[in-house]
Length: 181
Image (cartoon, rainbow, N blue to C red; front, side, top):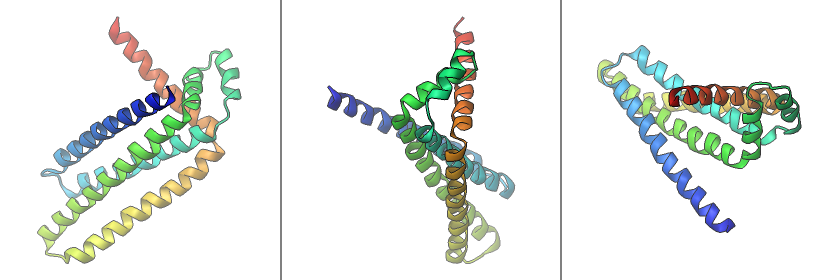
């Protein structure tokens, strides 16, 4: 039975990866079509920060201790019940946050930086190779450095991060319930 469950999870995560990748790429492509440099760099920064943010959540969920959230839930702390669910599903949550969203953000930020380089080369007749190396280095450095800082923060403040994620989920669950009525 465990094997069937694992295969189902793999299929679900694969489909989710495809959907998120298509959405990120579509947003990036549409936003960059005819966009200026400011908007292009803003979008690139957004993709880098999405990767860092989800990496923080993924690490925090795997390093958080469940016990404090039971106390919070008994005191009706918003997001505590959702935080418990996140921790109980830490393996899957971490996979989605770190592998799916994090990796896709990295890929899309790389694509976005390539589009920006193409724009710069076209507008200013700059050296494509050198500009691509510089842009790739900056984006990689910011992503890796941001994730390194984020991992340290996530491990030290895992309770806060997971509770915040739980509150975020609770907020959207509340909106979803209101729309059904």
